Length: 339
Image (cartoon, rainbow, N blue to C red; front, side, top):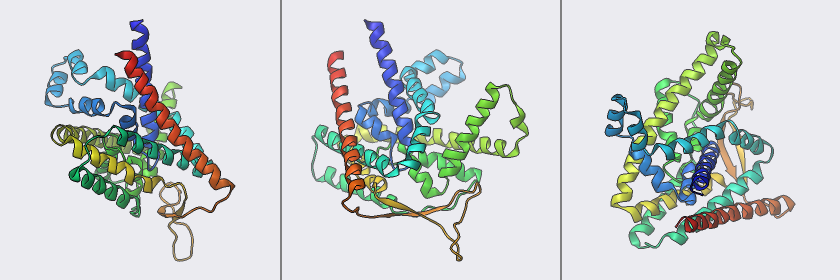
């Protein structure tokens, strides 16, 4: 029975990692929201916070088992395994769905965020003037970011490293979409599409015993960019987790209200009824980036007309709310059974 529970918990962690990975890939959605709603946010942050000087000392001394246990390895490894799997499976499916069913995908995510806000508010019992101000501030920051215009693509390695530090905020900070921040910084296609695809193609080549990619200058460049981006992401993830652990210990209610505000603010990014505006030159031709994709200038949001498409989108929005509330009920029952 105990083994069955253990296996069930492991599978559950991998699935949560899948959900976080998929959320991080979609512009406007945050993996931190998944952690928040699924009830493992504080364990996630506290585990990352344990990657510190003591952990580094254990690693240097070759005490790998102690290092693994110190950073809550059984938890983090399964979670990150799910995220990695997601980048090559669920996120690929999401890319397809967003291209072909954009309105309905955004509607589901919009509903999920509304459901998340409702669920978090239900469990939050510390409303006062300080937490209300914190909530409003978080929402204002989130909305403000959603209306920024994207920059041009920049493959300078120092800037790529900076992108890694900033974009990873979507994991520890619910409501802050790392992928949307990359769009604002101009490097979404470079880092989450081209670089990831380069890694996927390289792994496929290696499995087939084909090492000709070492002579492919463009492939090597993309792998170098991905490695620098990953290093920045790791630094950012650990740094943010240390800061959040401190804030949650010292100012828990205010910090949670601020995070809830970020989630509310992210609704501006995920608003389903929007059109992508691409940059054009004086002659009216679309401006392209280095890989030939049209450069995003901004998004034009609008109020939809009442028609069949809109009612269908609202149905998907309702589905998103139901999914989150159903997950909350499932988590509640699971915790009850463990007691």
